[in-house]
Image (cartoon, rainbow, N blue to C red; front, side, top):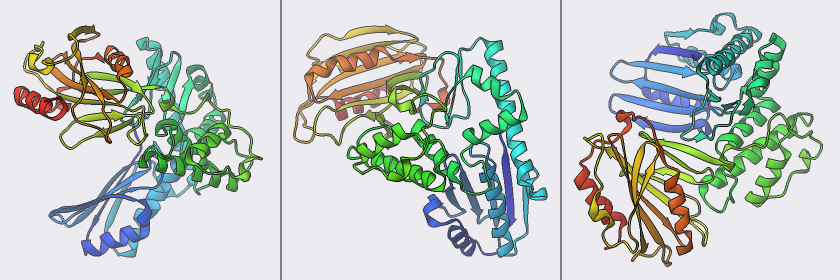
Length: 441
């Protein structure tokens, strides 16, 4: 259930049109660009969840766009409709816009907002019905991140925060109440970029992306922390009467190493929901049919060879932890453990019978290689679930942190797999490669 805009136009000069779109949109909003022989793709992001993709097909001599707008809101929807029309008209292109809200035809923004509010009410009602009929204790809606927050009973997880089910039910009682909730739920709810636009963008990043870690830890932390601070200060400058997340703002200023702006002193405190930030708690990652539960302030990477990596402090002097995982398909429902993986371990391997899987793990002691000229220690493990095998290395810079590694392993669970997400690899060759890369000689 989404709200989409579909655009198509006959190209006259693709190279000129690519340059024109980049200039019209603004280079700072261009987040990726892929140039191929038969097509050229531009990816823009105008706000949180406000992504916009244009495909220039050289083989068809066409420009194509399908843009989902319901996650960002009616302001983003109106912006994209206007942008596409101005672009096509500026180059006198024959074009077609399919807009299910009919905003392209009527250009009545209040009517567009009513359409989005109706969508939001329908989404909430459907969620509440599902909760009542399926005996779920909680739900996640409109989620678009690589991780999932920990569920809490009688709540619904959204990009704008975790809301009590009873409170969401109240919002559906009237048009006025859903209209008020839309101001808090949509990132871009008005036609212009007002104070709520900047604050709501900051709130989404606070909830879903911010690790609440020092900016010195990584470029990611520095960019995220700085962006949130900038957005919140813009919001306060636009409207000092708008409720403001003062506690989180103050915390981030300290983490980013900057002084708080006095402009926020007169703003009322934001108390719409509880303490902000899913990543202040543990979060879940789904790797095939395996569920990894780990602290939300860990950074996550997907490396070229296919490994999933989570780490908390590579940039810190000491006290770092890293989890490295590789998942691939097994041919049998239950796979056997590979003995050479544990040869030479300094402690006897143990078997963990976990929910949906079996895991064998061993402490292998100090690695022969150094990390930043210092020794580190590791635990290796093989986790077998339904037709899936995972190899894990858990590394840390202090031998006393061995318990951290086994605590992570004991929290792993598995569900029936989606085999399409797993890598097709040779088990035997991959395990030997794994040992070569991560295990002591």
